[in-house]
Length: 277
Length: 357
Image 1 (cartoon, each protein chain N blue to C red):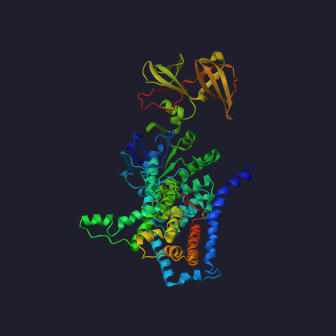
Image 2: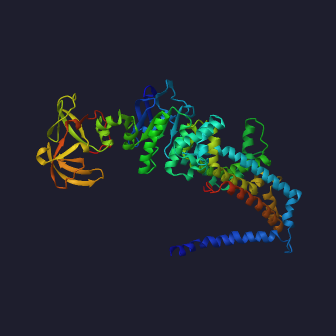
């Protein structure tokens, strides 16, 4: 009885999803598989094979992988400290710590990236400061390094939070048991903590890798217009060249990469633990 | 039994302003089944964790086999722990769980396989080697946790309320199982529980703790029959605890009546606590008792009736196999041998909080 009506509560979202997700997606597919005259073609898809496009795709994949790797290296120790595994973490303290950590996330993503642009510029804040100290200036803006830096800075919380969640699910006595049975800290980490927090790690990888792969803002602002990632190429097709067909076609290719990485992560992470933040 | 294996010297531990252990001294013999018994928050688990190496005491020393191990890491100690709620490695099979400690120690495959077989046989779970922990019942998981600990041949097995999560019947079976294991292995067991029945059934020695202090150390018989203070008397089994005055040796006044007893050396006209176990209270004809009372309540408990008898303003708890209906006027008699006299607590620290008056 009750359930019959409760279904209707999802109506606003279904309408929302229909208008803003399903319809645009269908439009992307329509444009992606047609040419300007509206005739069917797959040339927009195969266009990825051109040197310019494939280069942008590989660079995006490469930089996203590096960013993801750096995020893992930074996030694991941090998550260990923030979670109850961090030895001195009192029940209240670690909530504060996580809170402090996610504080910057509440600032607009674009704003943060622009702020880093100002900081990293050749005559930006950091270099003015280094100049004052008579230190050599940092030539980082408009390089792939700056893009990686921006990706790591922006997406690190998405690695930390699922990891903290996954680590918090491990019974502290399970870790104590490993120590009790003779394992040192490294062995305990590799044999117990890492396998038990794997679902969180997989979620983290997905949540860092996919936005890094598709970003165009970070590469635009911190990479200048010289370094093109696949996201920038797609953006330019839509905004500068008004070639919606090619933009859609390349989007579909990118979508395939996203779907593959999500499928891979669900295979590893069967119960999708840790995805919730 | 024999030699002292573990000595705890002046151990203190606090968390912030909360003192959990205060100058605790205790020694544990080889091959002893020692139980730390007390209500939650009494410091028993902290004591166990200090022996296991998961906590470092603020002051004091832990001596193991003549060596100071106070700050030795848990993985370097010759003790193994069976944790509350089992703490099995859920991503490994039962065999891998049991092999964990041995693989860390780089034992040969043949040795490990032998040990797994031996341990599974010991805990009667021979066919479970390739199962995952989640597919086992609580009692089975607990036995695996024990198997995982004992394959490492520890000198001491620490057990932190290992039966706490099991139902009553299983708990009783596991008590016998643990005694059997202890006898087969011939190692020291240090057992933490808040369940007095578990403690009485299994232990060689019981250490009753409250508020970070040891209240009494003794054999189960000793603790039950001769509690040293009102806390111990109240915590172990049911009891009538009555305020009284020791008139002189072998005579005590409670509820305005003088009773013969067998205790000596408390002094003259000294205030004391008197404990009388409910099964030691004899109900007789009204005129034959030391004092007169009236039955106010009866509960059938299976083995016996539990009766409440109002006499001289005190509600006596009585266990008896013969029934005296509510309203019966009865006399109360107690064998002098069954009247246990205890000193009143001298300081507030010793005050046994939680004793129901």
